[in-house]
Image 1 (cartoon, rainbow, N blue to C red):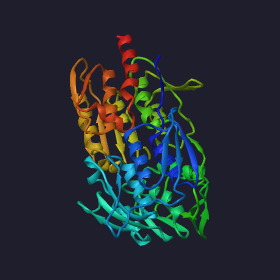
Image 2: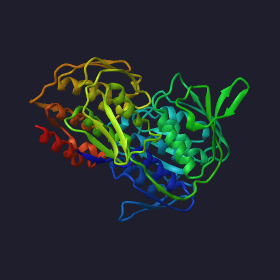
Image 3: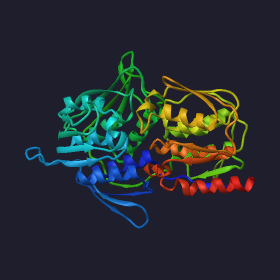
Image 4: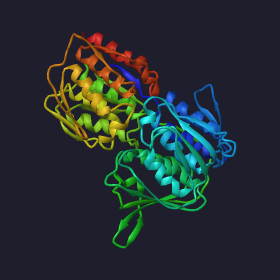
Length: 445
């Protein structure tokens, strides 16, 4: 029975690096994910004045900026370059951090990054003192930013496109000159669990904050750990000027990266155990366990880890707004199930590294399923997959599309990918670990 140790969480790694780099003193971050996206965040925080020293055990020692990220001199146009690569998380979080700093920053990326929206966050930051100039496409990077620190007061943000806008504001708010209240606008929110990870990071680095919900009498403090969603107009975040306190911080394992192996246990020939996952994690992609169970998978938790057994799966109606990164994995699993699966509330997937709705539809169709795209998701009607055939899939230069395509190997498809190396964005050792799944598949033949 294959046993896989889940890699460190990408979402937690981003936030831990930023918090440590903003702290007043020296922190040690252990279990940090070693991937392209995390390297981008590290390099940007170094560019803003932090010192980061990798250690032989994989940890990093971070000497923080004491809440003073530094840019270049606006008078001489000598900008500090913040190259976020293709990391949307780095872009959204560090745009707000740069606004809370002082000086001139040029924020730029690569590939689809220059088509991914940032305008909603910029609009929220302009009244706080930020100056911004888009250098190409309006509302998207690249852009020049002049940070003069956040003034405080009240601002609002919509989370219809991304929860990362709010996470960026929350990380930057303790650097403001006065208390900053963040209100939520728009009609709906997506990906609340990522905001919970941000709040957890703030608490871990001793940053005070209050989350308040609207009552008949006004606003009342709420335990944010009990929240499962954010209703626009009914919740606000009250942030105080504060310092991040240095500490030793351990990054937990990643449910997103584990999802491919959890799926392999359900649809493959042998049980798969995934070690290292926190069953009480705040990560939204912890939902993978519940989704597989709802589809009929037999799952056991033990000291060794979480074990998923080969199971007869049934299609389901799924609202995946809280866990959109799981959609490529769940869609692949649905192709093995009996009955139709409908995935809803993930329209924002069209703004990811690829248009993840159309990309997933295309790959699942190539595998042999009948799949149609919806405005906010997709409908998957399984039919016999193209077993014992060589099928060319596209990764769409998207790490999650590449990893989810590997699942079709368990149907007996000879999976050929145009860019398998794009997994380095979040999970550089994926193919090495996936070889364990292939060995179990061959042993069962």
